[in-house]
Amino acid sequence: MIKFIVFLVLFLGGIALMGIAHELPAWQGAVFAGGILAVSLGMGLVIHSPSNETRRSAGLEG
Image (tube, rainbow, N blue to C red; front, side, top):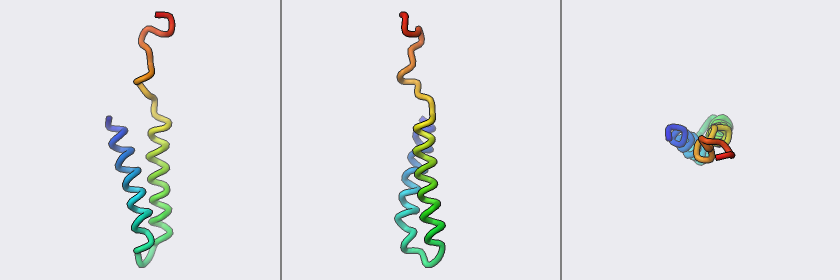
């Protein structure tokens, strides 16, 4: 559950950074790049984290 919260904060925060980047008087490129990095980090965290919903405790035999 904590990984989902971290993902949500990174993903929505990154989208917000990309959204406000064009309105800033300076550092537009750095803020936009930071938004892309935050979204990518959030997605990578979810994609590469192990999932417990599909694991079987007894294996495939039983």
